[in-house]
Length: 261
Ligand code: NAD
Image 1: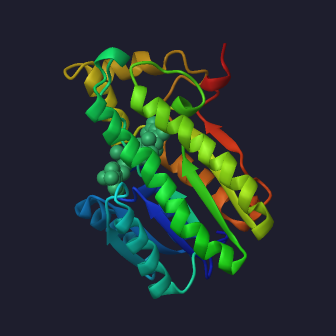
Image 2: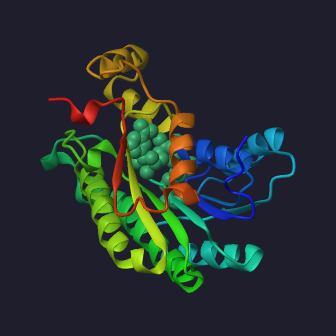
């Protein structure tokens, strides 16, 4: 087992479930000290317990926070610096799908809600974390975009706008901060089987969502959903020193679906 995160401090948002939880587990296995952030306290406890089962000596700080509130974001960054004295990696990942609907029926309140979490939350995170990393002269950030941030999916006005926005923030800040030894990248996952995707399939057909799921992955070149741990491996690599020269890039992890005509 390689220990790419020995002596490294990593913040993960949305760590109470899905991709955040899987990435936290992988980075803890490789020696990382973690700040795990989520709105959902129970989810955070579950992630911590899962990690401690496999890595009993893991160093974990839990912070309950709503990433759409700037003060909450400032607080999780301050608590991390207080506890560990530095930030080496940041998985800026918390997000929601929002209700699926045609643009005309999408609803302005729903749009604002999705923007406040998926876009404002990611911006606030970068704002406070990058200030710390710039002083250190090192660090890596991975923002979670989506295939919905590089392609049109439909029925997802808020999600599409915010995930395209995350791609824009990544490219912009990557260009700004490369000179300080900091790399900033985004991942663009396709359908990975997490509670979010289960919820999405249930929006399509609550009684028959597993069958809907099978049809959903039929056009995928690999004809399956991705697994959270597959994203965890990618995130761990991208946050490690091995990926320092990958900057301002958007990396799909989708079985090839976004390249298909
Ligand atoms: P998930 O629902 O399993 O986990 C998301 C976590 O974010 C939850 O624990 C939730 O409590 C937390 N969260 C939600 N709103 C928050 C807020 N305001 N403040 C703090 N935490 C909050 O979903 P997931 O599939 O793991 O998704 C993680 C990220 O990956 C999201 O940004 C999502 O858009 C993105 N993504 C997921 C997929 C997929 O197929 N699963 C595909 C593309 C992109």
